[in-house]
Length: 355
Image (tube, rainbow, N blue to C red; front, top):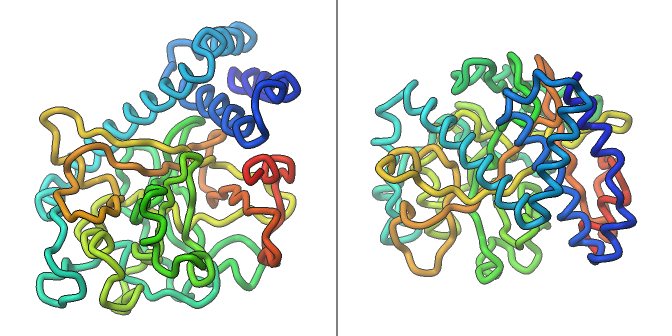
């Protein structure tokens, strides 16, 4: 009930007022930030949810107004970091030995078979040629739950389209504003975009690239498709040292399936939204780093435990229970050949995002 009032507030955001100050792309960034602020603050503030819907929405709106845009960005970052710390600590409690096995130092030589970390869990399925035409077969077993309320299941999608293949299903219950999945892979900052495999035609053979507003690109292709099969994807050797190191993290975090979430079919709304984060390992808890399924590409190999780690989380747009996850891909409307399965959720959002 309380969240419905907040949703009404979201619908009433004044796009006209904001657009007077910002160009279209920044406008979409601000709208996304406001939404994530409300979602993640809602999840983090159960004490407020007992208030009347009107008072609750008014209080969240007051907090957002007081913070302004930059303040809301910092609040979202703090909310996501808090959730991630709780999530990674929960994963470690389930399997405290897994982090010790995840060696995070980059290999010294690219392409050598010796010493290559074993791939397992979500990272051991071969890649099909077309986007999301995931190898059919028995559904993967439900992944061990890292939270008390839900687990993820990689199973045939509910989408009635030949290219849908597998999707990600949430088994159990997730609350509005809760992180339900992470987008795994190699993170490339703008300075290193030329290192993305296939540059400059990076999207030609890779449908698993996702870009943040700050230009960081996440490549989920090296992680795999999510079934414990013997075939590997991508073929060996890896393209760079970051892909080599990524193998150390595979199978550690069972929520690292964000790259397998499908775009909603026509007439269906997404139930998750993407949220950028920069993971900072808490003080004496360096073991939690192993549960963040990302390696940042660097031209100078070094320990990946140092500094922040850029990543992407999928946050629930509403309460989710026993259903497939759908993420709005927001593909560039200026591309000449958009996939036939793609239907824009909001054409205006797509246009602003890629202005």
